[in-house]
Length: 361
Image (cartoon, rainbow, N blue to C red; front, side, top):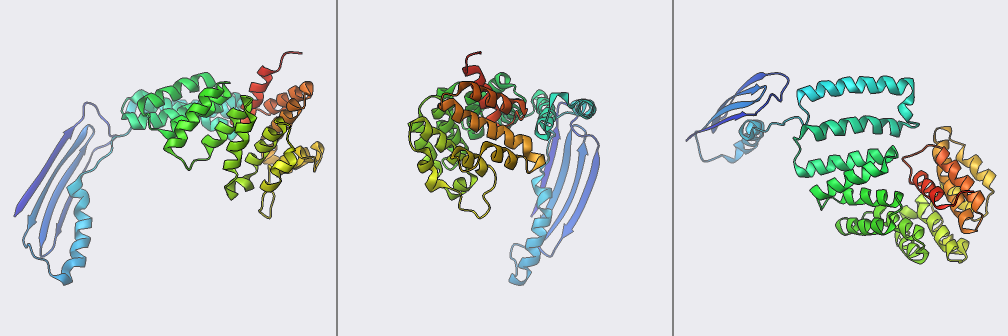
């Protein structure tokens, strides 16, 4: 038999930068295919003629026939992809990217780390993607999550909250949106909302650890230390999380807040790996195995990561001082954490939050 498949798609605007034409002729003892395809600036035109000469296939010919089918399949399926950004937007984006690059090289544009610089660029890109209005709801939701995350990295928490809300409205099943929104709520002192959103995220992705961390931090900061400890012990059932140490640090703080022997509480959860890397010195400092000066020295051993590590160290040290009632010392440590400028770290944001909690001198 002879079969023809014709396709003529025209879009309301130009979406491709250039036109092209393509032809193919493929044949075997069983089939013959002739195809022609033209890519237009505003669509695609394709015609494929297929002739089947035999309907029985010899076993010895199967491998060659299969290979031919795989070769002609793109002609039969006729897939093509429309760019998410139109040509005019793409040109403007290139111009803005050059301007941003020049600004970053000259002054840093208010950024301190490469993550923050990338966040500036990603904000520009995600805005162009959203302005194009070509994305279906699911993809638009994902782009909004990316945009909200970049806003959080640049200390734009209020704008990020609105961005995450729009993402969740478009796709209620977007676990990444729920997870990111829960962290944002925690940063903005909305602990109950952070717990609610993290719980919803866990229902969609039970194996994800990050919502558990967010929920544990929210419990702790909401003066529900016992619930925080329970959540952290669940996290620490994972050897991977034990070796990461962060959950053990939070368990120390939540246990200390309850008046327990926090050193004993964390003893079963010491890292088992041979190399007890950062942030293990933070835990050692909290349990008084090393001095604060030694912990600071450990943080500075890697100059490239020194500011990031000090951001964490000063925050956790400040939490211990806060629990012990040494408010002025806690204030100074939280300020030091914030002064590092590592806005993309949760410790920076929680230090900033604590500074709002502590009354002025």
